[in-house]
Length: 113
Image 1 (cartoon, rainbow, N blue to C red):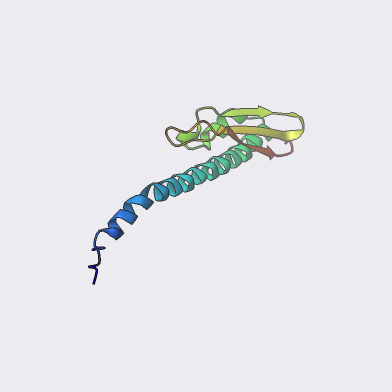
Image 2 (image 1 turned 30 degrees about the horizontal axis):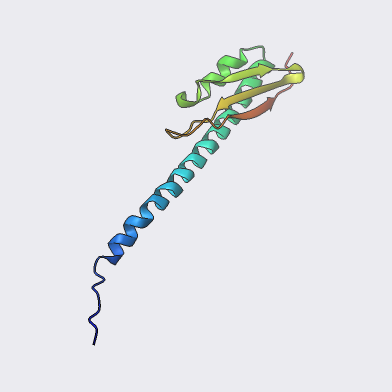
């Protein structure tokens, strides 16, 4: 009869082999959460900027005040005719990843007299 090999360390080896995949999945999920965070922030900033523009206020200051501080660098605000205000916010990325561009949103309020 041939003696069986011990399998006492097999689970540990399999766990170590799967760790990079688990880390990659968690990083991808976190980056997806950052994209959603930027989209939500751009939308809130666009609404605030369009309200400010409708009453004669400063849309850039209103957009900046409604953004969380990590999203403020790279903020772009542009008021266009008809009460539209377009906002772009740079999407934050995990360290070591290239930039993912900007999250964009448009807010609209009719100008108030």
